Image (cartoon, rainbow over all chains, first blue to last red; front, top):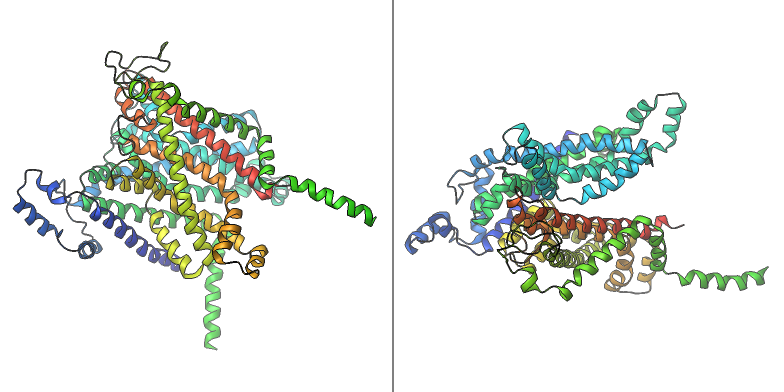
Length: 323
Length: 299
């Protein structure tokens, strides 16, 4: 298991390098002069020239990239062109709201969609199930920013219960988190329901019932663990979507997070900030994907034993080699 | 007995020959109530939206401000009210739909062309080619697709062509993965072996035999992807990186209406409803197509 995790972490390195190369190339080849962005439009040509020299913008792009990455490896993401702050400090401030928003909505997806999916499977074809089928169809089609606007109209403008802006207090976090998870509730409760129905029809569930176990125990202890795998896959794949979607939610609710930082930086061609934002986002997503895969082995002992078997096989092979 | 068999066999063959895969799928699709509902919704939306140039004039009805009638509630004449510049919301929803759906379909077409090419090459040749293509796509998968699209659009200028390109690039990785998985499955089947034994070239095998078989299960995915892309376009327009004013687009309309939510609700409600109805219709059709085209469903 430990070996597997190390291997997966090692596989992340070329991907992060690839991401940084592509984004760096895109930014370097796009029009716009960072020196002008820093010094303003009235800067003299001489000053601009000096600034370009200082930033290393006159070097060939591969040299620029290499110099940049040399610093990144030791944790130095440089200074923002537009705010003149250290990028790593900016991200220290901007990352927590985005993390709370993204993982908060993943968490609410799990705690709403799984129980709901189970309930729908147990009450299959009941009026509740049929109504929820239509409701979830519409919920899944609602873009977060629209449900966000509707919620602001209702809860902030008319009822005055929740603030429409910011992300400092728990009450301010409610709406952004709910808006970015509504579609996830709908999609994942359908997935849980479908896989639950598959599992419930299997023989071992009939056996469990025939043993005289209570229905609640049959569902919780026997059916749920097997039914959860597709939901875990889908929620794991939603991590990237949540991070991407948080850009829009941050703009809507005026949250000072990574997404808003990226948009501002892109507008001003603030290369160090954009690079750092993209690299850190891709690392977080890669780690989240790794956690998803580990969650499989937590839920399904068959997958857990696969790691053990592989290790045993390796030992056997090396043992035979010695003989 | 033998005679009867001989006379029966051609008749049976004829009967089964009459229904091709597509006719079969169409029959199953027609029996599926929610798919029919989706098709009717989608057809209505498309007809109403794409016939709008017949009764709307872009310069006078869609983009001309009328500052004496701003932010009016729905009333006779202006069925869905007017926006912050006094423009008819209904007219802008109809015109904007052409842009949203048009961009969604075109970028899906582009990404399926690129995705099918990459996925087919990757799946068919395998080995190093596969490794190189899939690893480079992994890089694109590592960035959330919306963030990738945002970066691409803001690096290029937000024209409609660039939007289509950015959206297509954002969805290429997942499309090529799906195509590759299908190609891998079909490549192993005997009929491909038989065609190869006949001496067909790789290109011919891929284009004439593998891709047509690979695509039918993917069509439903493509339809769903169009829905996702339409949501992505409105998301981009919502943060000001998509369709630029004065052109109407559903997400852009939501964005400009957002500043007036304290006073009026209709400016933000109706474009959103149009968006949701379109996505719901596409989802229903996509679901129905999946059931109709899935060979395992065939009895």
